[in-house]
Length: 622
Picture 1 (cartoon, one colour):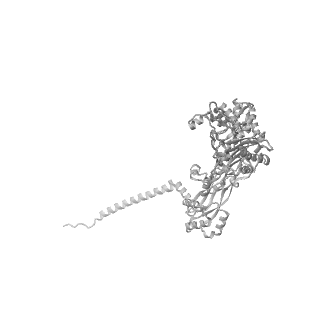
Picture 2 (cartoon, rainbow, N blue to C red):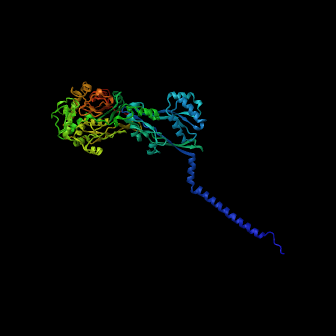
Picture 3 (cartoon, one colour):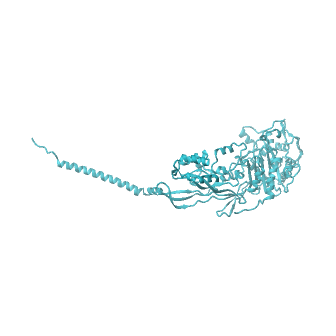
């Protein structure tokens, strides 16, 4: 029996060598992969990872620009930036956040909205970043917190720049206000341009000229540590402040106009008919715009919104009212231009007018009428029947077209927000809006500014300006100029002249403007006894009264038997001095009753201050 060897050393050596070779190949492959990956990271993608590394060390921060200031024409500040103190909480330094909030609520009477806003802001912040809790602390709140500061680690007061309106409610509807940027605004603005900015113009001048007032954002590069804390500023590009605006308003005249409307709901617009500069624009009642800057409490906002007198409603730009008799000069001018009437032609104006083959009576405001009248007397005494007859012969097509030349039914394009266009009815408009034909009786009531016709106070002021300048039209505007970067030179805004209203014979203007003087200065004028009798300068004006509800065929308007909210609206338009117009005024008083009794004296107060107590042509440079 042969003996087999226990081990085959040669075979084992071959097997071991094979394993070593395989292991070596694997090791070489692994090192090759590592080398390739290192090459990719350090050579191919070097720039990418170097940038990421740098961003972990250097951060770019936005520097919001100071908002531009707003002045009146005499250099009085209307909107400014001033320090405001806010309470800020740094979460990582606060032991028990809920306990801290509870104790602060007892100390400073925090609103639930403030706490909710704080908690929402907390979600997007790092623990070491301060989060605002209460904005715009009062002096009393500052004092209360200062005494108890040691009891609130991680809570501090910081000064910030905030918008402030020194004249408060007087200019709320003109200047508007700024407020915190909301989600809807965030979706439409350039977020890079508004980086670091928390507020934006919401209304009026603040919104219309937002691009000018906002300025250009600045940036700074800061070095941060791994936790994101700022270590030092490496580079800084300062922001460019917003541009300072100078408005055409005179804050003194604005105050006089507001005082003249005190206790009433309505609007006053005064403008320079030569260049379209708005000198005063008042809507009453009004509100304090400072309430909105730091976020108005829900309770306060609901009180404003639900107030039946509507203080948030800008009557000067958004209020649409029947213009009443204030447009009779335009209708008279249309009648002259189309040869329907002659200024000296007399007609008997009874207490009512009837159309051919129609028994309905279209009543005059004066029960027994005005007797024999021509165009002068018809405007001076505001005879409705005279204009009923004229408009019937003129027709709605020619009347609507001619009134459209003055901008009736069109927005003026004033540089503000919220303007509505009013309404100039026509045959085509009614068919499109109501699907019905135009009726002859509607022409009659349109001629006295009733029916479908609507106008805003700023439109009436613009129309008055056109009358004063005998057809020359200019767009109303609030911006007088922009201050240069040196804060000295005023770049004056050029007036925008529109297509003028032309008539075939120049004397037609005299034939409708002279009666406007008689309205104010003759004893039979509708505003003589209330506003024009003792005027030391010549005024041209026209009163108007517009119905709030329709009367039946044989009903008579009895103001004393009606609740106040059903009284007629009172209107007045006028300009002065009549021979060289420098101011055109439109006044509307809601449910005021008589335009001659109520609105004309309001306009007279504004004109008196302008003509007798101020220098309207004074230039101003800072």
